[in-house]
Length: 422
Image (cartoon, rainbow, N blue to C red; front, side, top):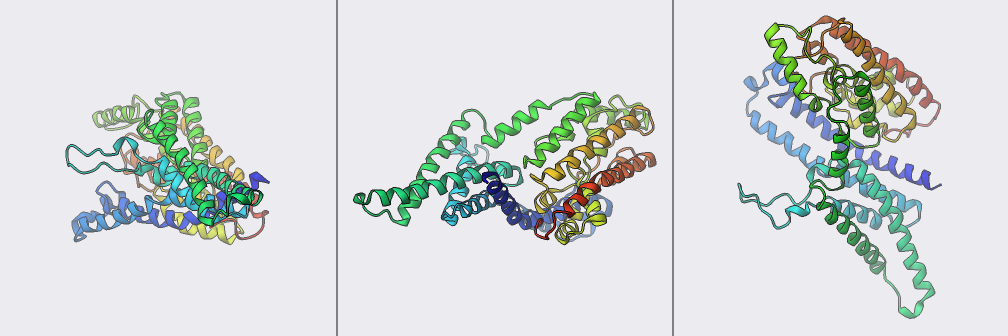
């Protein structure tokens, strides 16, 4: 019963957060793909040469993205606590606010209190802003569930205690809220302040640093790269958005490959053909972690649930340019045990296929840098300097991933109903 309460609370939180994430991501699609100088479509269509006032457009879209990004995780914490309190017949609104405040206190930048930037003279940000966006969803869920349970039970206990001890006077609604809130804030401030002595990023920073360190520099061994990619995708499924940067872990080897290609005019026989970057970015996770672009195509092909098809239509464009957070929350894919299997298996199969193709010299490795928002199926094609075999392999990986997802989408059809997705 307690597990079902928690899962329903999580699904409700993700459903509420979905439209905010969707708007933020669509804004990022325009801002990062069309308006940023490093964007794919900016470079293809030379947007800077014909769009007047491009600086103002960039600032406009950046403001919208920044505002929404700064509240997404707070919304998740509030909604999780709010819905869980409703299942306990507690004061849902009060508990939801407690959950949001508890999450914020865990993300206060305690090291920055009373400090100023010595260069600009301005105050240092008082919150760890990165943790308030999609990256903080996992912690927000944990805080929402914890405070939702603790706050509801504590408020209920206070009400019962008052009935058993009438001689102490009547405890008002304000008192029943203020006492739990005070206790929760004391605990979370203590945890947050204590962690500030260990890490600069709070709980999120501690978790992300540990995860990144555990998978850093996997080298050129295919099995290790396969394991790192699978671990990264499981973490995404849990709501730990982006703990492993495939490109970042391969930066040195990517530069070596680029230098070789510039010198020899081709990526064939590059010194580092097998890396997280050449396998993961090019073939295993394009369109977003878990090959969610193929998930959308599978939904179009076989899903009978209008809600799933609606989310697929809404999130196709972001997935095409490798921004898949709306898909994770909208279906939701997060914490969905049925979709976890293809979410991990499809990239793993693609890595094995790409490893064979590159090792047997059927395709060259990607050596040229491409914009982050390059449409997923074109990453390998452009990264190899326009080799048609790399494009063919990308399309094979996409097709294979769609085939892997289809049985699981059909399985979800048997759940019935039309209220599973946002």
